[in-house]
Length: 255
Ligand SMILES: NC(=O)c1ccc[n+]([C@@H]2O[C@H](COP(=O)([O-])OP(=O)(O)OC[C@H]3O[C@@H](n4cnc5c(N)ncnc54)[C@H](OP(=O)(O)O)[C@@H]3O)[C@@H](O)[C@H]2O)c1
View (cartoon, rainbow, N blue to C red):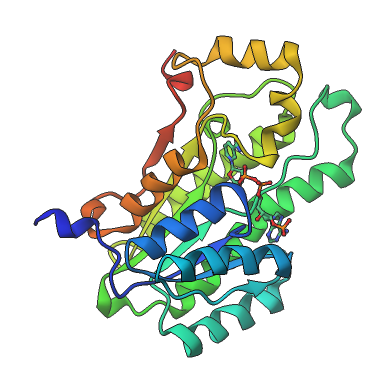
């Protein structure tokens, strides 16, 4: 196997949460690696910007606006992407939310349900529909679930998010063993990345200082530094890798 194993030439990828942040960067890097990409999120306008970046890089984009918690819309999206781009080889479950930062005593059940619904149930909907349609003869089926360092250690004041990301790690391992050898299923677990998602904590001087103190590399990641791992995990270079929680966190979980 040569270095061309890192290429995604001829593959078709669906990237949820592909309208900004980590998902946008994964969509663009997968296109640069040769895949035709369907970025998916709720905001159609933001998806058009991702699609323009993909096309500017010489790639093929097929944006689709939907909410990952809408089962009917997810099913229709997979059928539509297949008829427009061909059978889907790669699913990146990246859409995620974290509207709660605080003491679990103050957490209302609606917020709890929302976080679990998007981060876990939404990822499962997409994985199930992908699993039902993937062409197993091709041997190119890959799911990358964008988990978190909060999948392997608890993040302070983020009980529902930590719970959801631990669950996503469990789903990753379960699907990896149930769907082997047809589909490889891995999780990519970033530490703190410079996106809108972490803007609030990065702009609070005290929280920012505490976070940097906890990161051996003493800095936040760029989305591109995470996206390259997603390309690797989806490529033939990772052909014997499944059920892995691939941590890219500047050393947080190693302590
Ligand atoms: N940033 C970090 O430090 C960090 C660290 C570890 C893990 N992560 C994980 O990485 C993933 C991406 O995070 P990010 O930092 O890039 O966040 P972000 O900038 O807030 O982007 C989130 C993406 O998910 C989409 N999305 C949210 N809810 C959705 C829904 N119900 N249906 C469809 N799309 C939805 C958003 O688009 P719309 O709003 O248009 O729907 C957007 O494209 C998340 O799963 C997050 O938990 C992030």
